[in-house]
Image (cartoon, rainbow, N blue to C red; front, side, top):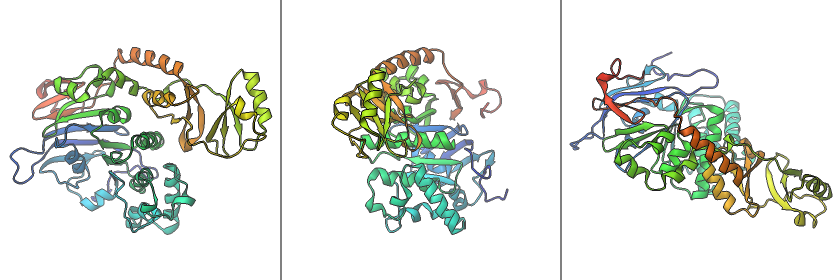
Length: 421
């Protein structure tokens, strides 16, 4: 590997492990460092959420990984190789970067925006076109409809999806995200979060994400790093253990009230058993659907389009008024992704007249139905599992202290120098 290449698995790049080793950043004119002596292990293929109050150094930490901000001292190790000495531009071409509101170039089409890095890497036109279409499909945007549009013709959520596609264009092992969903409405934010989890389930990248939203950190993160001023790592652990055992009063205050309710975000819909209702396809006779509903003892049927996506949820009374199923889409359909949390599911159920929600998977394909009873049973199971603990947390160090699972101990009490064990 040349000195200007970032690590890659060749073909489809898997996530890369990252280690910030005794990293410090001092800005001119500031008495205290923005980041002080941080050593932090980011496990390969995981989502690590950086949270903390404004000005605590989490965005500075993020930007030092791809050296948009150069560290004053310390090393950044990517997949076992120190990248602090290689060309910064070359490094950044191999690390995906997503900012708030997408950061798209307004004078370029969606396809041209996504193709920026592949063009820099001298990909041929056919490979670029194929990759653009593949990524638009991945973020649930029809290439035929969106490839030639400009950013101003997209909604905020669509722009953010394109921003994610652009960050993934050259298949980087690492994806950095700086408040990626902070500029969209709550409903769109939930959908974008679900989409990111779907993408991660397929690609297994290493994702580092800055957020001010602790609920978002719990929903998305495999691990959560809570920073205080100067990027002092107060607690670095799984969402389950942070909610169950906050390291100190600072963490308790940051989590805020309602920690019990936040437990609902610890279990995702894909972890519970779904109920399969009666389904029908566009063009089917409604009389056939009514017969199947009667035989199953059910009151409602889900209508699927030609791609297996739910578009209607009709009662027996509604079906009796029709001859065949149409392709009309009900915009009020209570749909959630299978990567959504139980908290999301309950929110969706509250506005559903059926007291349940329809669940979709990758490419919005229909998977089944989740009910209130299913959620309540899963909550009980999740609480039991949380009491049994989980795997060891990654290592985080500041100023001569090392932290595992929310319990600071002196570095000298750990074998070696505090590097990941």
